Length: 196
Image (cartoon, rainbow, N blue to C red):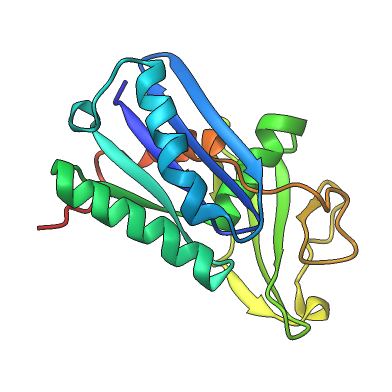
């Protein structure tokens, strides 16, 4: 298994997680506007947990959005800076896909409509379903619309998650870096980017 660091800062929640073989360490905090201050200590704590140096990792995964503009910039900035400094590739992951994976990991939801508040009476959303490996895969492209424009599948197995819509059954669920690790492993090494 690759050694991967995951960074998630696209919402009011801030998290980091590190995959080391079969072990996962994670840090999570609901801390609006504190992500830039919290992320480096979180990463340092995870590296120390496994007695690793950044250069010993195989890749860094990060949330590329959608979500908070500032939060997405923070994740991309940390991933690019750390990846460039340690000569590591990065793996961009959708924050809506991470939210769907978090829903599966925490509540065994296999059919998720991920939503995030986009302000201005609009929401980001995407429809995801688990594959045979229990990885959430997109059935639609991530989209920005008014809530009433969401095309909900006609059967009743779909669960709305996230804070984008008042119809969400899991309004307080946020994407978690530990769940992003599963998506990153599925993308590694095919969809890695290297900053040069």
